[in-house]
Amino acid sequence: MVKQKDVDALLAELEHARRVLKQSREAVYPQIDTLVERAADLHKESIGGKFEPALSSVHYLLDSMRRGIQAKEVLNQSMAA
Image 1 (cartoon, rainbow, N blue to C red):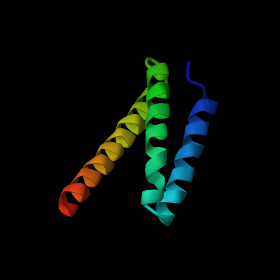
Image 2 (image 1 turned 30 degrees about the horizontal axis):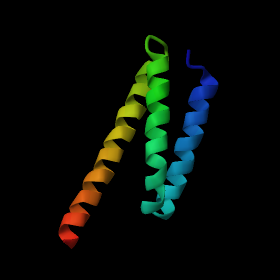
Image 3 (image 1 turned 90 degrees about the vertical axis):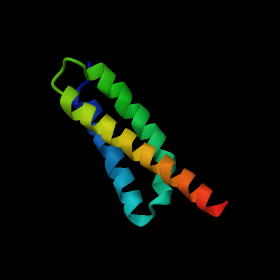
């Protein structure tokens, strides 16, 4: 069961990532996988609970961001070759 403190902890992690992103886009890349996994775990735990809609959105948005980063890396590699 997901508690408010779990959501607050994820929010703090996301806020930290946002601050890093504002300074350097590439600096946040290593954190993305960890954030996606954390959000996925919380989303699974929240199914049927009051936090499910919000955690579902966060999980899928972070996953989309990760896929975008991966696509950008592939594109950059193909442009360099």
